[in-house]
Length: 316
Image (cartoon, rainbow, N blue to C red; front, side):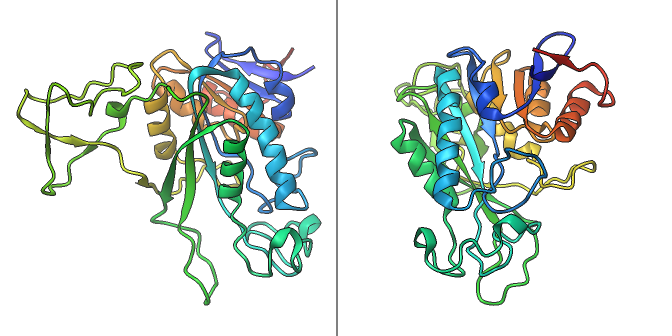
């Protein structure tokens, strides 16, 4: 039996269990958008049996990720989108892989040329996963750079301090729902201001699936917006109850606004402390989350329900 929490109005559900197993119980084509940040490879041991990220090689990690997101693709609507955040790690020599909490089970496993990696190599996990998902049938539509003004300090002297991660936009189909206007940026004062033209598709969903009209004064007036760029500058956002890195709300928000309409269902199969659910609720979307660690599920539940975890569990 899988324990779960559901909001009184039934709009938000969080399952406690393995992502692959829980996803297998969800109906086909039932989710409009998936926004998620899985456990990074080789970074932390979250202390839960069956967790992702402790595989002995990148290839094993990628294989498991492909299996999980194959189920995500099944439950996505045909016009649905997947927004996938992944960080990278380094091949170490007998030490921590990725620079996070020491993972004893992983120490020294990547010594030498295993999986083609040399000591100190950047592993390239985000792109390995992205290309594997592409090969498995996903459309890889965009790589977005999450630029962090407040990155984690690193005591390195032979390379730059890492201050970015990747956010990939992948889709189930060639045509999909994407509301460009919902996440358009204000013009920055450069000389390339646009004016509206009756035949100009800017500001409309090019797939004809959304209402994405830009708010402008009149035809011929300067358009005060531009299409969202692929570098998003967002501070990391700590959550007091969590000892692990959490998804910033400002990183999640444009994904949900571009990928859904009010009332649509948003999925996070690695829900963590529930940030995706919090943003979905804030913007009138429904949410279904999956979290393997019951402690983290309790955090997510607490944030969504405004109650203390540990009361009201049900099973299905």
